[in-house]
Image (tube, rainbow, N blue to C red):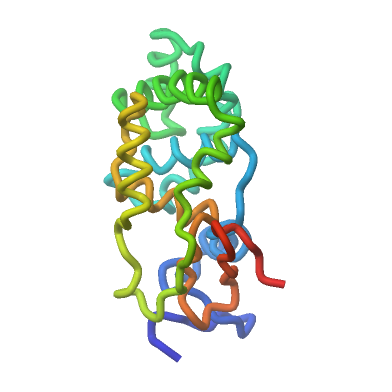
Length: 203
């Protein structure tokens, strides 16, 4: 077994990055790489990946419920109507990441999401178009890319539409998280099988 997989106390093999923290292990086992089709959850993931920039994902994960409270469960129309007072309120909230640029970006992106939904069936339908038609699970951590042509294309299109904090690396992390690709290492007991346009769970 590659050293990039570790066997937990339950005997199951997991990707190296989740370590032994129970919150991180649960996220790895139950969420990461699993198909997300709900637009609010997709919007949440994009926002939180933006907040994660420069920080560890575990830091964001530990604050996720506070983020959900502060951003009204990432309801797109609600966040789109946040004001400068909303920004100041969140800058005073120590339970989230208090970064003005990232907070303002999330509000801007909610407005841009509303614009997008004026011409697309759903946010899910839009991002699914950028899923690769074929994606092989990586054999080792060195095989996991930071960006791909698909993440670069999605980032470019989002930026064209006015979204912010959506660079190719952030967007690829989003694609990994919501099941557009399966980057659980080959041999990890929690991988999913990416079928046509991704998003197919293991039987």
